[in-house]
Length: 186
Image 1: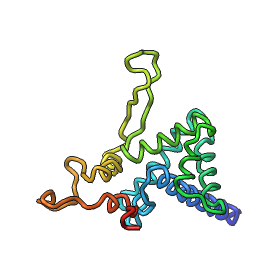
Image 2: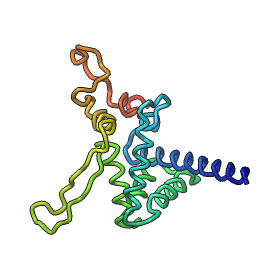
Image 3: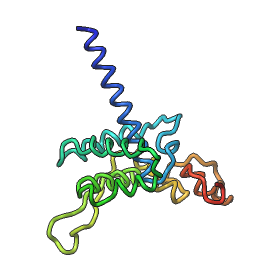
Image 4: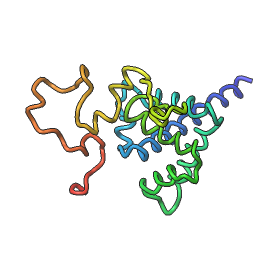
């Protein structure tokens, strides 16, 4: 009996690891950031685990299993031969043919990574607010981990790893923040 329990626990850990790997890959494709930025080797904040859990929970609210379907399609596209480019995979993931809920879940994931918040599109019939996006921060860690700060080559107010006076030097290239080589570096 104990062996069956251990086997089930190992299967769950393997599924969790595969789900995390697919989530990291999907996140990198959709955000345009390198996987080494999404999931750094030294990762004391581990925001990716927070995001995966939160994204799954909120994505599956209206359509059970949607997050698994998204990650499964990503894994299929990512392992296709000949290999698809990240651009091709991203376009396929955001194609309207996937369905409105599928595409919205992918867009919500992009928003989550960039802003550290979960978006809600207002659908209340009021002409002034109809279609506007409201968002809720997950935590202070999600706020400071938002990719938007790296795109702006800035840091959140009150949270900086830079030394005093860093602003007197020109900012590093954007590719240093995204982990992706620019055309001139390729």
